[in-house]
Length: 333
Image (tube, rainbow, N blue to C red; front, side, top):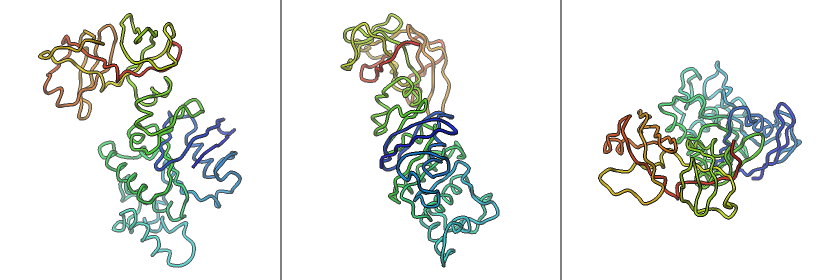
Protein backbone atom coordinates (compact mmCIF):
# COMPACT_ATOMS: atom_id res chain seq x y z
CA UNK A 1 0.00 0.00 0.00
CA UNK A 2 1.36 3.40 -1.02
CA UNK A 3 0.91 6.32 1.38
CA UNK A 4 1.22 9.94 0.25
CA UNK A 5 -0.04 12.62 2.65
CA UNK A 6 0.33 16.37 2.95
CA UNK A 7 -0.51 17.96 6.30
CA UNK A 8 -0.45 21.68 7.12
CA UNK A 9 -1.62 21.75 10.77
CA UNK A 10 -0.82 21.13 13.63
CA UNK A 11 2.55 20.32 12.02
CA UNK A 12 3.56 20.83 8.40
CA UNK A 13 4.82 17.71 6.66
CA UNK A 14 4.57 15.81 3.41
CA UNK A 15 5.46 12.13 3.31
CA UNK A 16 5.44 9.32 0.79
CA UNK A 17 6.24 5.70 1.69
CA UNK A 18 5.00 2.11 1.53
CA UNK A 19 3.14 -0.03 4.04
CA UNK A 20 4.15 -3.64 3.59
CA UNK A 21 3.14 -6.24 6.17
CA UNK A 22 3.96 -5.05 9.69
CA UNK A 23 5.50 -1.65 8.97
CA UNK A 24 7.21 0.51 11.58
CA UNK A 25 7.67 4.25 11.12
CA UNK A 26 10.65 5.16 13.31
CA UNK A 27 11.28 8.74 14.37
CA UNK A 28 11.98 11.00 17.33
CA UNK A 29 9.20 12.60 19.34
CA UNK A 30 7.73 15.71 17.77
CA UNK A 31 8.40 14.91 14.09
CA UNK A 32 4.72 14.30 13.30
CA UNK A 33 4.30 10.52 13.62
CA UNK A 34 1.08 10.67 15.64
CA UNK A 35 -0.27 13.47 13.45
CA UNK A 36 0.28 11.28 10.40
CA UNK A 37 -1.66 8.41 11.98
CA UNK A 38 -4.52 10.75 12.85
CA UNK A 39 -4.51 12.03 9.27
CA UNK A 40 -4.82 8.48 7.94
CA UNK A 41 -7.68 7.88 10.37
CA UNK A 42 -9.35 11.13 9.25
CA UNK A 43 -8.97 12.83 12.62
CA UNK A 44 -6.92 15.83 11.40
CA UNK A 45 -7.29 17.75 8.12
CA UNK A 46 -4.97 16.44 5.41
CA UNK A 47 -4.71 15.70 1.71
CA UNK A 48 -3.53 12.44 0.27
CA UNK A 49 -4.07 8.78 -0.31
CA UNK A 50 -5.32 6.34 0.70
CA UNK A 51 -8.73 7.46 2.01
CA UNK A 52 -8.24 11.17 1.32
CA UNK A 53 -11.56 13.01 1.47
CA UNK A 54 -13.43 10.27 3.35
CA UNK A 55 -14.91 11.08 6.79
CA UNK A 56 -13.47 9.07 9.70
CA UNK A 57 -16.47 6.76 9.99
CA UNK A 58 -16.08 5.65 6.36
CA UNK A 59 -12.36 4.92 6.51
CA UNK A 60 -11.62 1.18 6.80
CA UNK A 61 -8.94 1.63 9.46
CA UNK A 62 -8.46 0.23 12.94
CA UNK A 63 -6.75 2.84 15.13
CA UNK A 64 -5.01 2.06 18.43
CA UNK A 65 -4.11 5.41 20.06
CA UNK A 66 -1.19 5.62 22.47
CA UNK A 67 -3.47 5.59 25.54
CA UNK A 68 -5.63 2.84 23.91
CA UNK A 69 -8.81 4.81 24.83
CA UNK A 70 -10.49 1.91 26.63
CA UNK A 71 -13.59 2.81 28.64
CA UNK A 72 -12.64 2.23 32.31
CA UNK A 73 -16.22 1.44 33.41
CA UNK A 74 -16.70 -1.27 30.77
CA UNK A 75 -15.45 -4.84 30.76
CA UNK A 76 -13.13 -6.11 28.05
CA UNK A 77 -15.96 -7.59 25.99
CA UNK A 78 -18.06 -4.43 26.37
CA UNK A 79 -15.17 -2.32 25.07
CA UNK A 80 -14.82 -4.62 22.06
CA UNK A 81 -18.57 -4.64 21.45
CA UNK A 82 -18.84 -0.84 21.53
CA UNK A 83 -18.26 -0.26 17.76
CA UNK A 84 -20.30 -3.31 16.70
CA UNK A 85 -23.71 -2.86 15.15
CA UNK A 86 -26.55 -5.35 14.77
CA UNK A 87 -27.41 -8.40 16.82
CA UNK A 88 -25.30 -10.86 18.81
CA UNK A 89 -22.89 -8.12 19.86
CA UNK A 90 -21.66 -9.98 22.94
CA UNK A 91 -21.14 -13.22 21.02
CA UNK A 92 -19.20 -11.39 18.30
CA UNK A 93 -17.13 -9.48 20.87
CA UNK A 94 -16.23 -12.71 22.66
CA UNK A 95 -15.19 -14.25 19.34
CA UNK A 96 -12.88 -11.29 18.73
CA UNK A 97 -11.36 -11.60 22.20
CA UNK A 98 -10.81 -15.28 21.50
CA UNK A 99 -8.89 -14.34 18.33
CA UNK A 100 -6.45 -12.29 20.41
CA UNK A 101 -6.20 -14.88 23.20
CA UNK A 102 -8.15 -12.98 25.87
CA UNK A 103 -11.43 -14.86 26.12
CA UNK A 104 -10.79 -15.79 29.76
CA UNK A 105 -10.41 -12.09 30.62
CA UNK A 106 -13.60 -10.98 28.88
CA UNK A 107 -15.33 -9.85 32.10
CA UNK A 108 -12.41 -7.88 33.52
CA UNK A 109 -12.22 -4.10 33.46
CA UNK A 110 -9.12 -2.30 32.12
CA UNK A 111 -7.69 -1.68 35.60
CA UNK A 112 -7.59 -5.45 36.12
CA UNK A 113 -5.52 -6.06 32.97
CA UNK A 114 -1.80 -5.76 32.25
CA UNK A 115 -0.46 -3.34 29.66
CA UNK A 116 -0.13 -6.12 27.09
CA UNK A 117 -3.65 -7.39 27.78
CA UNK A 118 -5.07 -3.89 27.36
CA UNK A 119 -3.33 -3.70 23.98
CA UNK A 120 -5.00 -6.93 22.94
CA UNK A 121 -8.42 -5.61 23.96
CA UNK A 122 -7.78 -2.48 21.89
CA UNK A 123 -6.64 -4.67 18.99
CA UNK A 124 -9.81 -6.79 19.22
CA UNK A 125 -11.91 -3.60 19.21
CA UNK A 126 -10.02 -2.36 16.14
CA UNK A 127 -10.60 -5.70 14.38
CA UNK A 128 -14.33 -5.30 15.00
CA UNK A 129 -14.39 -2.75 12.17
CA UNK A 130 -13.01 -5.27 9.65
CA UNK A 131 -10.25 -2.81 8.76
CA UNK A 132 -8.11 -2.77 5.63
CA UNK A 133 -5.24 -1.34 7.68
CA UNK A 134 -4.26 -1.11 11.36
CA UNK A 135 -2.68 2.02 12.85
CA UNK A 136 -0.71 1.72 16.12
CA UNK A 137 0.55 4.79 17.99
CA UNK A 138 3.66 4.11 20.13
CA UNK A 139 2.65 0.56 21.12
CA UNK A 140 5.70 0.19 23.40
CA UNK A 141 5.03 3.27 25.56
CA UNK A 142 2.83 1.69 28.24
CA UNK A 143 4.62 -1.66 28.51
CA UNK A 144 6.68 -2.92 31.45
CA UNK A 145 10.36 -2.82 30.39
CA UNK A 146 10.90 -6.28 31.91
CA UNK A 147 8.32 -7.93 29.66
CA UNK A 148 8.27 -5.52 26.72
CA UNK A 149 10.10 -7.76 24.26
CA UNK A 150 7.82 -10.74 24.89
CA UNK A 151 4.59 -8.71 24.83
CA UNK A 152 5.60 -6.93 21.64
CA UNK A 153 6.56 -10.19 19.98
CA UNK A 154 3.16 -11.67 20.83
CA UNK A 155 1.33 -8.56 19.59
CA UNK A 156 3.22 -8.51 16.28
CA UNK A 157 2.60 -12.25 15.81
CA UNK A 158 -1.14 -11.73 16.39
CA UNK A 159 -1.23 -8.94 13.82
CA UNK A 160 0.70 -11.00 11.28
CA UNK A 161 -1.73 -13.87 11.81
CA UNK A 162 -4.61 -11.55 10.94
CA UNK A 163 -2.87 -10.67 7.69
CA UNK A 164 -3.81 -6.98 7.88
CA UNK A 165 -1.27 -4.36 6.70
CA UNK A 166 -0.19 -2.39 9.77
CA UNK A 167 1.55 0.91 10.38
CA UNK A 168 3.05 1.31 13.86
CA UNK A 169 4.77 4.58 14.71
CA UNK A 170 7.46 4.52 17.38
CA UNK A 171 10.79 5.87 18.59
CA UNK A 172 11.75 2.42 19.93
CA UNK A 173 14.45 0.52 17.98
CA UNK A 174 13.26 -2.76 19.54
CA UNK A 175 9.92 -2.50 17.73
CA UNK A 176 11.68 -1.38 14.54
CA UNK A 177 13.70 -4.60 14.49
CA UNK A 178 10.45 -6.62 14.48
CA UNK A 179 9.13 -4.95 11.33
CA UNK A 180 8.65 -6.46 7.89
CA UNK A 181 9.24 -2.99 6.43
CA UNK A 182 10.98 -0.09 8.18
CA UNK A 183 10.47 3.60 7.44
CA UNK A 184 12.76 6.19 9.06
CA UNK A 185 11.36 9.71 9.49
CA UNK A 186 13.16 12.88 10.51
CA UNK A 187 12.74 16.63 10.10
CA UNK A 188 9.27 16.22 8.61
CA UNK A 189 10.30 13.92 5.78
CA UNK A 190 11.05 10.27 5.05
CA UNK A 191 14.78 9.63 5.27
CA UNK A 192 14.85 5.97 4.25
CA UNK A 193 12.70 2.85 3.93
CA UNK A 194 13.25 -0.83 3.25
CA UNK A 195 13.66 -4.21 4.95
CA UNK A 196 14.96 -3.64 8.52
CA UNK A 197 18.17 -5.59 8.00
CA UNK A 198 19.07 -3.39 5.00
CA UNK A 199 18.14 -0.12 6.68
CA UNK A 200 20.00 -0.97 9.88
CA UNK A 201 23.14 -2.13 8.11
CA UNK A 202 23.26 0.76 5.64
CA UNK A 203 21.65 4.00 6.87
CA UNK A 204 21.47 6.52 4.06
CA UNK A 205 22.54 9.57 6.08
CA UNK A 206 23.74 10.76 9.46
CA UNK A 207 20.30 11.55 10.92
CA UNK A 208 19.02 8.11 9.96
CA UNK A 209 22.05 6.48 11.58
CA UNK A 210 21.43 8.39 14.82
CA UNK A 211 17.78 7.35 14.85
CA UNK A 212 18.80 3.75 14.20
CA UNK A 213 21.03 3.70 17.27
CA UNK A 214 24.54 3.99 15.85
CA UNK A 215 26.54 4.97 18.95
CA UNK A 216 29.86 5.61 17.16
CA UNK A 217 29.66 8.27 14.43
CA UNK A 218 32.65 10.30 13.27
CA UNK A 219 33.40 12.94 10.64
CA UNK A 220 35.89 11.53 8.15
CA UNK A 221 38.01 12.54 5.19
CA UNK A 222 37.89 10.10 2.29
CA UNK A 223 41.23 8.70 1.18
CA UNK A 224 42.17 6.05 -1.39
CA UNK A 225 41.01 2.73 0.06
CA UNK A 226 39.37 4.15 3.15
CA UNK A 227 38.94 7.19 5.38
CA UNK A 228 40.88 9.23 7.90
CA UNK A 229 39.34 9.79 11.33
CA UNK A 230 41.33 11.75 13.93
CA UNK A 231 44.50 11.18 11.87
CA UNK A 232 43.88 7.42 11.84
CA UNK A 233 43.51 5.65 8.49
CA UNK A 234 40.67 3.12 8.48
CA UNK A 235 40.39 0.77 5.54
CA UNK A 236 36.93 0.08 4.11
CA UNK A 237 35.26 -0.40 0.74
CA UNK A 238 34.27 2.96 -0.72
CA UNK A 239 30.89 3.43 -2.44
CA UNK A 240 30.87 4.96 -5.94
CA UNK A 241 29.93 8.43 -4.67
CA UNK A 242 32.96 8.64 -2.34
CA UNK A 243 35.88 10.55 -3.86
CA UNK A 244 39.28 11.18 -2.22
CA UNK A 245 39.31 14.55 -0.51
CA UNK A 246 35.57 14.60 0.17
CA UNK A 247 34.20 14.76 3.71
CA UNK A 248 31.73 12.21 4.99
CA UNK A 249 30.61 10.37 8.13
CA UNK A 250 31.62 6.89 9.18
CA UNK A 251 29.73 4.83 11.75
CA UNK A 252 29.99 1.55 13.59
CA UNK A 253 27.72 0.00 16.19
CA UNK A 254 29.00 -0.57 19.71
CA UNK A 255 28.41 -4.33 19.44
CA UNK A 256 30.52 -4.46 16.26
CA UNK A 257 33.67 -3.08 17.90
CA UNK A 258 35.81 -6.18 18.51
CA UNK A 259 38.15 -6.48 21.50
CA UNK A 260 41.38 -8.32 20.61
CA UNK A 261 42.19 -11.32 22.79
CA UNK A 262 45.71 -11.14 24.20
CA UNK A 263 46.35 -14.82 23.48
CA UNK A 264 45.70 -14.41 19.76
CA UNK A 265 47.58 -12.50 17.05
CA UNK A 266 45.81 -9.23 16.19
CA UNK A 267 44.44 -8.56 12.71
CA UNK A 268 46.60 -6.56 10.33
CA UNK A 269 44.33 -3.56 9.81
CA UNK A 270 42.05 -1.08 11.60
CA UNK A 271 43.62 -1.79 15.01
CA UNK A 272 43.36 0.83 17.75
CA UNK A 273 45.24 0.80 21.05
CA UNK A 274 43.95 2.53 24.15
CA UNK A 275 42.39 2.26 27.60
CA UNK A 276 39.04 0.94 28.77
CA UNK A 277 37.70 4.04 30.54
CA UNK A 278 34.50 2.50 31.92
CA UNK A 279 32.55 -0.75 31.91
CA UNK A 280 29.14 -1.55 33.39
CA UNK A 281 26.42 -4.19 32.99
CA UNK A 282 23.54 -3.43 30.64
CA UNK A 283 20.94 -6.19 30.51
CA UNK A 284 22.66 -9.34 29.27
CA UNK A 285 25.68 -7.40 28.02
CA UNK A 286 28.40 -5.02 29.23
CA UNK A 287 28.74 -1.50 27.87
CA UNK A 288 32.07 0.27 27.98
CA UNK A 289 33.97 3.28 26.71
CA UNK A 290 37.31 2.82 24.94
CA UNK A 291 39.68 5.78 24.66
CA UNK A 292 42.41 5.66 22.05
CA UNK A 293 43.02 7.77 18.96
CA UNK A 294 39.25 7.44 18.56
CA UNK A 295 36.79 7.31 21.47
CA UNK A 296 34.39 4.39 21.06
CA UNK A 297 31.46 2.84 22.83
CA UNK A 298 31.69 -0.95 22.98
CA UNK A 299 29.05 -3.54 23.85
CA UNK A 300 30.18 -7.00 24.92
CA UNK A 301 27.95 -10.06 25.32
CA UNK A 302 28.06 -11.39 28.85
CA UNK A 303 29.90 -14.58 27.86
CA UNK A 304 32.61 -12.54 26.11
CA UNK A 305 33.17 -10.38 29.19
CA UNK A 306 33.30 -13.53 31.33
CA UNK A 307 36.08 -14.87 29.11
CA UNK A 308 38.07 -11.63 28.77
CA UNK A 309 37.49 -10.37 32.34
CA UNK A 310 37.96 -6.74 31.32
CA UNK A 311 38.06 -3.94 33.89
CA UNK A 312 38.24 -0.13 33.77
CA UNK A 313 41.78 1.20 33.42
CA UNK A 314 42.94 -1.81 31.44
CA UNK A 315 44.93 -1.27 28.25
CA UNK A 316 43.60 -3.14 25.26
CA UNK A 317 43.33 -3.28 21.49
CA UNK A 318 40.13 -3.08 19.48
CA UNK A 319 39.47 -3.79 15.83
CA UNK A 320 37.07 -1.99 13.49
CA UNK A 321 36.48 -4.57 10.79
CA UNK A 322 35.99 -2.96 7.35
CA UNK A 323 32.66 -4.68 6.68
CA UNK A 324 31.22 -3.25 9.92
CA UNK A 325 32.20 0.33 9.06
CA UNK A 326 29.49 2.24 7.23
CA UNK A 327 30.17 5.40 5.22
CA UNK A 328 27.54 8.11 4.71
CA UNK A 329 27.65 11.37 2.77
CA UNK A 330 27.55 14.59 4.74
CA UNK A 331 29.54 17.59 5.84
CA UNK A 332 31.27 17.82 9.20
CA UNK A 333 29.27 19.53 11.94
